[in-house]
Length: 63
Image (cartoon, rainbow, N blue to C red; front, side, top):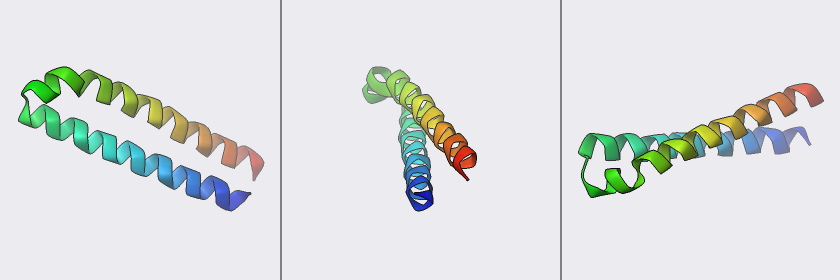
């Protein structure tokens, strides 16, 4: 069960990193993509960070 939390946390952190990179790149570049998707990407990043923190807390509580 502990390995499941570790893998889930790693996947969540990688997802946050990926969304952050796409969001930052679109902000730097600007244009229509940023206007259309920039806010949604940052909302998704915050949500994924919450999921990652919840997984950390759950792993801590179960260990």
